Length: 71
Image 1 (tube, rainbow, N blue to C red):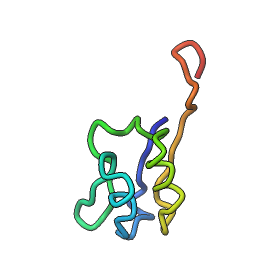
Image 2 (cartoon, helix red, strand yellow):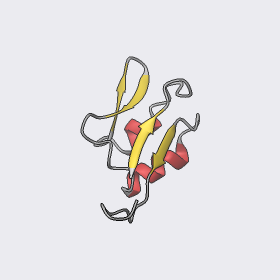
Image 3 (cartoon, rainbow, N blue to C red):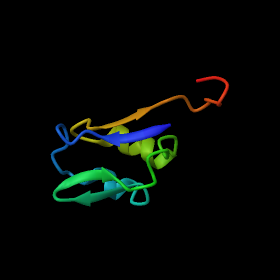
Image 4 (cartoon, rainbow, N blue to C red):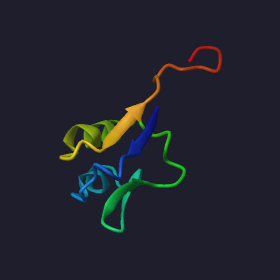
């Protein structure tokens, strides 16, 4: 599952970086996904960050059960 942050929605609360520092960081006043961590969307701490983001700027896409034969 892929996680991303919409910079147009993010207003810099840093909740994501606080809740899942191994996946998110705070850069130039905005939350961003750390390079190489884009596929960490299924991690419990990431799902909590999605739920708690006050600007609803974090999204998770894809299926947790996807395989190369089945999207």
